[in-house]
Length: 224
Image (spheres, helix red, strand yellow):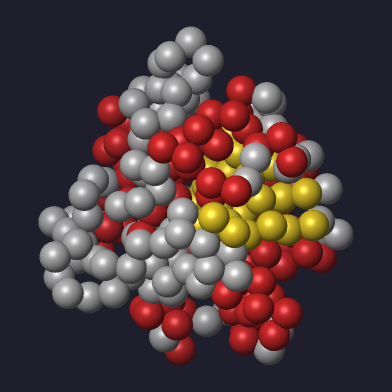
């Protein structure tokens, strides 16, 4: 069982001068769900190497059992520091793909031609595709085989407009995940802010927020 995890390489939070990147819990929780299930995990990002960590996800209040485990796991830290470039990975080499969130993907992975092609290749071949929190941004330009938006007519979730407003970044992000999914024809649903909510439609799996990280990974495993 081989799972590809794709992380952002983008570290600038719009024009704020602040840093962003991937959200630690959204990487660590799925990573250990997969690892404990015996999966072989490959990490990749647009630029390769160490992906930028959203500094807020490193705050004491954002820590979980999975993030604490990661902090004590030099092997996992070494893997993260040496992600492959997206250009060097092929969908055919893996059984599923998982995209952790953080605000970074809104800027790079949502627009990256290689990422879009990977999503489409995994989906078209019937392999599970999962994304959590802001990572459903990767479906913005992805198309199904017939050329329609990949999420059109499908049940999906992702970081809600209310949650974006709660972190006061509505006017900073290039687009709102909820609005984009709806505009692309997705049947969007959400739970209360910060509560776990995972949606599975065929072999497409989406999670709403950081609290959904474990559940999104577990749902992906069931499809493999």
